[in-house]
Length: 251
Image (cartoon, rainbow, N blue to C red; front, side, top):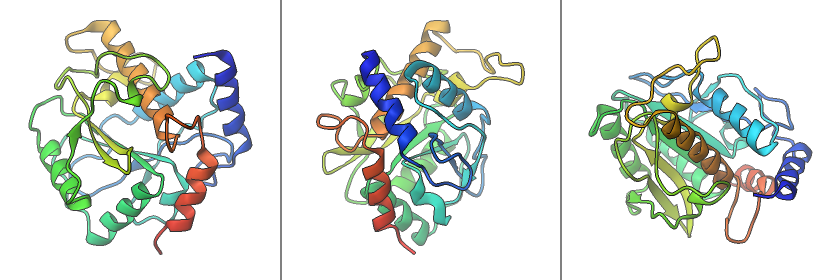
């Protein structure tokens, strides 16, 4: 990744206002989805830590500060990237909430779902798969191939990582050639999170510091991919994504 490309990305974010209730208008902000049941913020510092890494590594300006957003919230369509995390079973979303999320994803939004349980077939995993079946009944969740753009959107990555290696792959939902939802079972948030002293909040299971760095790089790559409409043709088109979301949002 060249310095020129990083500069172009930074200028795009600086010039484009992201109108939110929580962030300065020129900064990238990633809210977490709020839901009932379970724990929707298992790692409260995970996203802030990732945003710090994005700012340091890519020169993109970010805005940190934990905030949750309900799928029914009118500001949902003002964010190009939202994050959903958990480790336990959660309550089913309403038909209206699923419709809003479906509309959000169909017109430019992006969702990363992160299972923080570090277990196979966890209760969170079961809830997620039920949610996705209701969200896109005609579009199955599929393994993401290693030649996907997400593995080269910023860093060249040849393996999937997280706090624990539960799966050797990511899963996703594709709509019209674009991946709009990515699901990780490897507890990415646990690898990103820091404690109050700025130290890593959780030990890595299996691969040590190298595994953590791979998880951070994967988080950066996912973010870069989320901020494009078509990686093969575009660089960062945040203005178009936001305009498209606002134009198609439901009341």
